[in-house]
Length: 220
Image 1 (cartoon, rainbow, N blue to C red):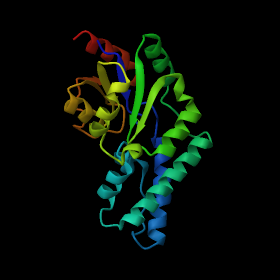
Image 2 (image 1 turned 30 degrees about the vertical axis):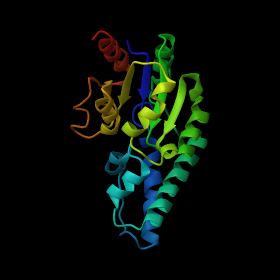
Image 3 (image 1 turned 90 degrees about the vertical axis):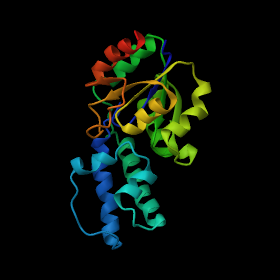
Image 4 (image 1 turned 180 degrees about the vertical axis):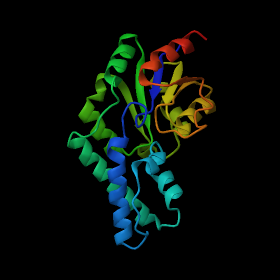
């Protein structure tokens, strides 16, 4: 029986697109000013593919030719802008997310967050949304030197009751499940690209679909 749910945060419970596009463009404008990039206007839809990736992987994919210190500075700009948005009250969980988490907690599940975000970003969300109401563990990739999620999971699995299910919208979430032989729910409403959720045990097409898919996992 599944006892612990390992939730991704961005794109699974948090509507990150509200903050990310503007933050990304701020960093890109700085790159243009520093003559590391050509001027270009990026639409939100063009950059959401990077949501759910850790900062190191994102910059190595987006502009691998940049010097590392420049990547780090641009990444810090995005982080600062997003945290400012959170603190200004512009961040939002998906509609129905709080109700879902209340329901799962009432049903007796232990829940943790495993995110590819930075430490300060996760801390800002913990404060803004009082996430300790639902979650007993918070794990971000910066705390593990930007290791992959499948590498991080063994470092905390003993802290929470077995068995586990992973719930997320990107292939990085599902790799935790496939690597460690866990059940999973792929969130098709998030930011994952076509084919990313092929390895999921079940697919949730909306946030409200998660309890149904979880019940189907429990009945296996």
